[in-house]
Length: 600
Image (cartoon, rainbow, N blue to C red; front, side):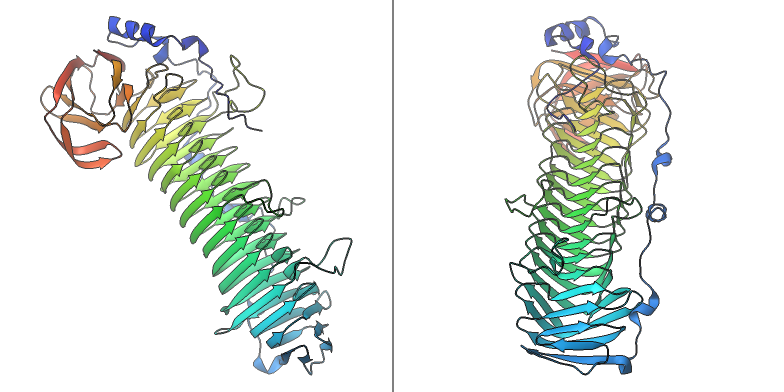
């Protein structure tokens, strides 16, 4: 259980009143205060970002596979039994099926084409364990008042084919008479106790008024043109696995949207999406798997609204995996009551575009979290991007993170129950590796918070940090190495930290005696007029930490404030800026790896 209402830090001895802090810095230009000293990191284990790269194919090798064969989709039209649904009766002349009133029972392998309407009836598949059944939906409207309209009781596997150009509807009632009362089965509009594939170029609509829309107790494959679901509980549920190969799928669910929940076998309980256009509104999780969630590509519009439905679970996450979440590409728009993307173990994002609004964390992994070349906008979150007990890797891509607490958080075990004020629960073995193209953080808590270490190797990192003295724009327990890129971190000065002296790149901290107004432009250039940075903060602040490969020892610089800037801007940081009309605040010379400049 994560304790998010406590901030357990390991540098309590460094917390001093702001007035004493300012006095220290007015006495010396070089930073020698323990605010800027690195703690002993002899126990730190070096980890390269490439160590965490994981592919979907690697994760697939740990899963049980699927039931699909190429022959599943090939059959002869001469081998099709034609069945007509006539409201309250059924017409058929098949050797493999029999009719009793408005109930059709299929007992042997074959291809069965269904068309017409059943006002209150049922299609039952009760075949042998080696029988392959194809149900071809050729324009059907099947309703059942007290059971599943399609009930697959036994077979080797069943392929439900939704014919091209047809519209098909399955509807159930709000109460069921169970065939198996002990197991409460069937319990879904389309229910299968064996492997099931739903396939075709037509449209299938399921109106689930009792429980789930599709519930398969084995493996489930979806490859359909259009699928529309309304369910009082889960939308699509494949117990052993759920594989979506393609389709335009809309789900309105009182429980989870997509679900695979075999938690007794670590090779099962996974969801894999090759590509899809998914629109899910769920009172539970939008996508939930006991083990892996593997996404190749697609468009995902996911909303979890946490309604008071008695069918919804207590979890209302966007994407939730019990083991690995791996996403290669796609466009994601996620709005949810809890974490938008969550894994109980690891997350690897290899690309894609993400627009996230979360009442809890934007992206959260309990262990390693890696994001490569993604475009991520988190408009609302508690913690923006968080790893609880692992390393964090951000390599390439553009990120804008808004958080009511920390922007990036490497808890390193320090947010877990059992720590506490004055107790060290962090670990030097965990590191946050940052090399984005562009990263901007708007945080009310710490901007970049690592209970372990931080290594920056490149990119533009802009932090609009906290205004309260109880948090810092940068906050780390062990070490912070700035070995490339541009860092601008503006925020309060009460818990000020800067990159450490082991950095290969120089840094400077500007400390102001009083708070500076939001929207004021600050500009640094060399004494010869070469621009280093032009920056406009979105918040009030009392300190700016700046690091750049162009910040050279022995060189003199000038800090200006006010005026105006034009040019290309990323979240307040201007590149190739035209700066005019400012007032000189101070001059300074860099004489060490980490320096400070005090400003009245």
